[in-house]
Length: 295
Image (tube, rainbow, N blue to C red; front, top):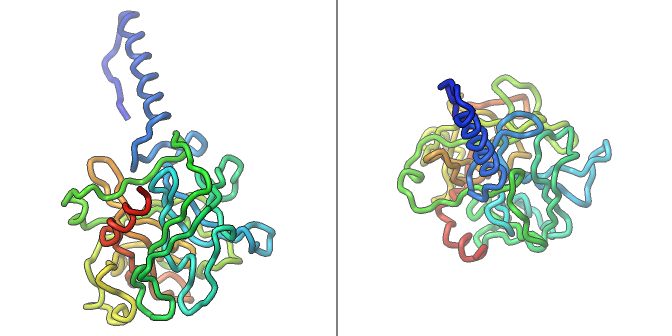
């Protein structure tokens, strides 16, 4: 935001200022750039236009709403990215078909979906390394191909993929935006029949750690060379079941880049335990696979 402090006394100067503001507004409203949050016209809160929540088109909750499943992030006009276990869970033979899910984008308030945009899915592509029969969360990444390409505007635009900048890979603080997070000492936990903890997406900073198995040995059973950990040691929120597939981003030059995808953790059903790490799929390790498919 630019604050103009100099007083303009002449009509010409005033006119120039008005034109300048209009040009800035129009540039923001029509920008197709990636990784740029905007101020929501509806809630006056920071809006992350790449967020697209995954819902079941088959199952409904007790109150009659479509069942919320996972988070995802739009990465192009035809694809979003999520976790593979959102499509086929561990130790399950059931794999969600493309017609069984849909996306809701432009989610500003989960209690008011009047201005959201539904996106139907043509194809679900899970990474070939995803194996629901084993315990490790290797290859926990999937792409959702839209039935129709979407148009980017001031409501929907993608998050940036890594462009090879070393600073992105070495950044030690990640930013996660999710509806499904509990603060320290929050009671209870999320499940499909409960209300989502937050009506608005909330932004959290989480320290990125290359490995967590040195300090929390139980992660040895689920981590791999294609994952990393974040949070832990009371340094972040508790990411619950419905946050799977949500992105952790890094900010570089005021632009958000996709760094990882919420994969797994160990949940304390008595309440929030933010001493425990969260395991993320390392998107940088799958960059070639992603690029090959979306191009």
